[in-house]
Image (cartoon, rainbow, N blue to C red):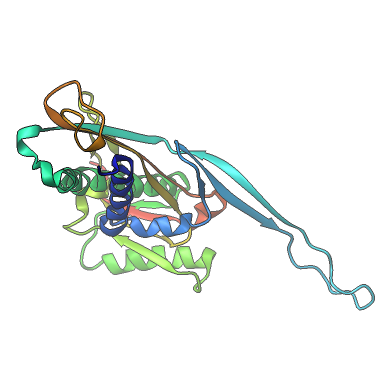
Length: 265
């Protein structure tokens, strides 16, 4: 008999991998390497502080400095979920894993990944705006390079030129994912951009910390097939999906985030 718990774990791992491969913001999760996650909606982010340089003493030698490592609890505010019924007639019982995987793959690619990108780019924009580091101007061929160079110079003036710099530029492919305002539909709770287009974001790659976790994938079969619990609501395969995600910018990195957007009417 197939191991239903193992299959659900495989789904969960594959769905997380799909986000890393297809989200335009996936590279931000590289900064979460030291983040501790043990399930649920909370992660622990390391905070490191050190003493600065002091004078060397020829009698006593090196000064004694201190290093402090603490972990700050951060709650992932984005607790998103959905469930699907897949009619038993539409599922090949000999290949049910592939059928369910195809449905979830389309769902993530068309709905989940664009929403995660939209949320992340908007949150970075809001951080820049809150620090008075956002510019709202109409761009033309004559001004775009000067405007972009001004933001690059502003970031490098604070962060230096050695730290890897990222420019996230609005394109026809990702324009729907870069917006100054994100709202939820009152009925469906789906997210969409309802403000102005974000033209670009400029920041050191190491500044934002993004985390996304598929916390639960629960699979039910029509009549208890393949070791899965039986779904009581319909003659269908049923999948419950829950995704936690969020993005944070440490306070000490807010001064290196700059943004440019279209002006309001």
